[in-house]
Length: 379
Length: 140
Image 1 (cartoon, rainbow over the protein chains, first blue to last red):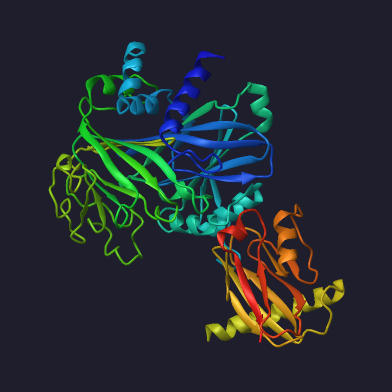
Image 2 (cartoon, rainbow over the protein chains, first blue to last red; image 1 turned 180 degrees about the vertical axis):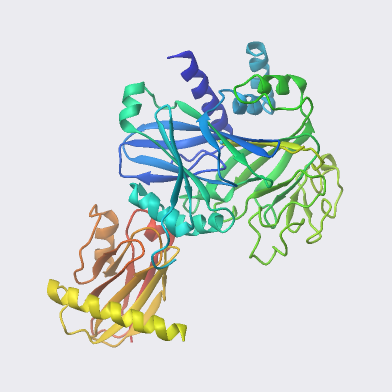
């Protein structure tokens, strides 16, 4: 096995070990997997998204799961990408290791992701990374769903509603699938991950969590790890009550972590100091009806819309702490409406109430083990 | 106003479908009643309707989703067969029809004479039945 492939597989293994156990669904926080009557399987995806100087970067690793029934992946994006290229190799792996002590030590020794005839989806960008075909689409749920259907994806029955959920917020999606012929040509093996770096200008970073439940049936559970890196403490809002999502850890990111991340491909944007927050998702698909909104401005007002609350009874405004502001210690702060400053509880996330990760110039890195990583930086 | 336009549109569609069905010989001219069903977010609406004993019903299904669906109606054996079956597409024939994304299709079904009989209908594409894409017609 080639060294690079080994590293990618390890990355995926590390992430998926701590994250999604189900193989039929997406094991990442930003993409949903659709089965296809084709030749290959595309399952666990790992993604990093970063934001610096008004540009957000996602690095997503898609894992090849072998032949026999194809899967494609749809990733909701907050904006139109300007580029899609090969991503780094160890960022997510390193983040997982950071919160998994025994493995972290090992890593240190080594070291150093309606009706009628709607307008068709617009293909904004097409590219290939390794054996992976990537297409950036713009369109409503009907258009994107139709595009997926027309292109051989077999969408799960919950797909129409979930696509609609995301399209109302952002009409941008990334569709990915392995090309069977390229898989053979390039010698891709089961478990190999293909990291993809997506650069997206946006002022409003958020992490799609609901799509993790795509294709999941009753009785299954969505498990994921989410890492958030910010220059200062941001405020995180996970749906109305953050059911199934807890903030497990929050602390200044270690210099060794930042150094290791910074040395990965495409990660040199990382500032010298950051806050690390680690969230765990362990929810039934029906519980996971929300996304993770991140306010890195220091105002403490994560967007209810970005959290997927707009239109719901709890979503009373475009911004604000309505709903499940996350805090460490297993508690969830109840926002005070459209102008929450971090929830009604303690603002210190370490003491267990509202998670106050906000700050001007904050940078956020969110990684979902198995998983998505999102990095956000605002200057 | 809007509903009137929709009604006219639906009527126009029905006329077209009736012609198709008639030409295909899959429905027959003898439908006693037409029931219109809508599929949205992989759910039938309505998911229940009553029919008189011995009625031949034309089921018209409007698929508003961006994915394909199907309508299968029949007894438990029919559903079991389709749930385990591998037929990806059903041409319009009595009791079963595939409905491509964003389209309207129709089929017919003749109910029995037993009052109180419940006849299920649903979609057996992978995962759809389990997802809850089903309904019941009751002979009343």
